[in-house]
Image 1 (cartoon, protein in one colour):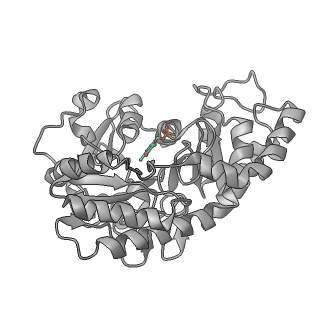
Image 2 (tube, helix red, strand yellow; image 1 turned 30 degrees about the vertical axis):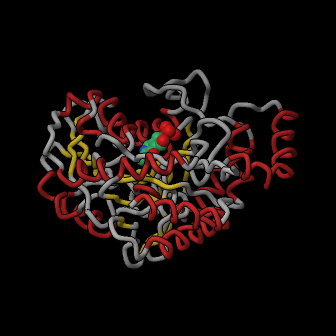
Amino acid sequence: MMTAAAVPMVDLKAQYDRIRGELGPALERVLASTQFIRGEDCARLEEEFAAYCGVAHACGVANGTDALVLALRAYGVGPGDEVVTVANTFIATGEAILLNGARPVFVDVDPGTYTMDARQLERAITPRTKVLLPVHLYGHPADMEAILGIGQRHGLPVLEDAAQAHGASIGGRRAGSLGHAACFSFYPGKNLGAYGDAGMVTSNDAAFIERVRRMANHGGGADKYDNVVLGTNSRLDTLQAAVLRVKLRHLDAWDAERRERVQAYDAALAEAAGVTTPRERAGTRSAWHLYTVRLERRDSVKAHLAAQGIATAVHYPRPIHLQPAMASAGGRPGDLPISERLSNEVLSLPLYPELPLPTVERIAREVRAAL
Ligand SMILES: Cc1ncc(COP(=O)(O)O)c(C=O)c1O
């Protein structure tokens, strides 16, 4: 019997095959320069990514988690402070707050977009609140207009966790330029992914980016051994910067290919009972990092797809306020009913620019069969 080919969640080899001709010379240039730390490609990537996002400044860092840790620290977040965020996210969002000695205050998400419910934000703000930290989950921007409005009323900066949202936009303005600052991850599987760990902080605030830059390089001033503030080593690697510069040129085309696959999924699943497909808010374009559906019988659909050789993933099986690592934040089951319900119902289907459209049809057919 012929079995259908296995389908992965992401296929980085297929992407590599498309760009290997461009990567070789870019990597060779770094190797020949021997500028492995803070090389020319780091500065160029910062300029190019800032321009891509539509902001004046960017600072490359070692990964997306450090981007969040350092950006919060650059806002002066520390012990006794609170940062309002969501629990329907990857653990790094919460870690960055706790690692600065501050307390994460979690609000629930909007059931339509799975991102921060701005209507709940106001109640969560206290005199200790220092920063608002919405997450553009699965590539879909949070309701920034409402969140920024609340931030403005309370004099609070809004930091975007844009780790999943390279190229997403609201009203034509890209993620990275929507709040006062933004944090990106270039983890390999992201829409813009390095060949290792890498991250970036973007902002129009030059002084803010300068604080991040200092802290990411041992608190240094002009001289290497002039360590003016307590910092760390969280520098962006030059080889990763060279890879990311090559890939940045393709990001818009890849995001468009993701969108095409999303439309194919939507069309194939529109009439199916028992599945809710993801939606974009009016005026908002998702970067479609993930195509995540809601299913009443999630685990049996997941098992059926696995038996057909189709990989899926759950983003995320436990909202982070219920993770043992976040226990000091005092989260309890029942605190965030929508986030908690989503964790039992969401399922991410394979999505990447090279995913063949007939394979999308096949996956959708198997989802319908499982239902
Ligand atoms: C929403 C979110 N925030 C933060 C991060 C942390 O990024 P990194 O893995 O590069 O540290 C990730 C990704 O992994 C993420 O998805």
